[in-house]
Image 1 (cartoon, rainbow, N blue to C red):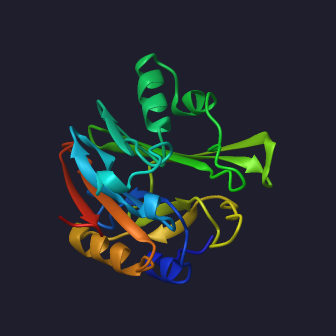
Image 2 (image 1 turned 90 degrees about the vertical axis):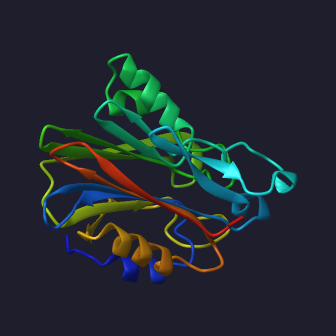
Length: 238
């Protein structure tokens, strides 16, 4: 698999939907995560990311314009000890709660399936990062309908042990814009990472379609200490 540049991948797709990037900085010091949301409807675009403890949650920017909170208001990021969970829906809570009960990331997601938003049946995409005393590994998952048929849920989990410095993986909900929206296909894309969190954040944000982008979260976790820094960018600003 060839390594691709995220900016080229994003600029070439006006509507990848929601996306997760997880990887390791080129200098090997940081575990990196990014999550973005996009929207086509007024309801989807009426959102911001806000910090919530060690994680984040989505929130309506203008409460008077919030027509349906289901599927758009949730906690995309939660932290459980040395584990960071990033997802595109309320399965964040499912993974968090079931991992507390000693289930694995994959086992927790077996209790969920794609979103019930016919005719799109948006995939649920998820990632889990574990950083502990200089060791780092991550997993990614996608739960999707069977070629748009909601009778069957196809489940895929990808595990990355001892990830290579400078490499990351990118998974998103839609292949491109459309009606209905075509679900992501294949394994997570191999992408190049950056040592500079601010530069990485700026590149991602500027590469997303100007009309459709809504919010972006980026976190760099020091693999040795577990300390982290976070950037949040919202198109809607007070």
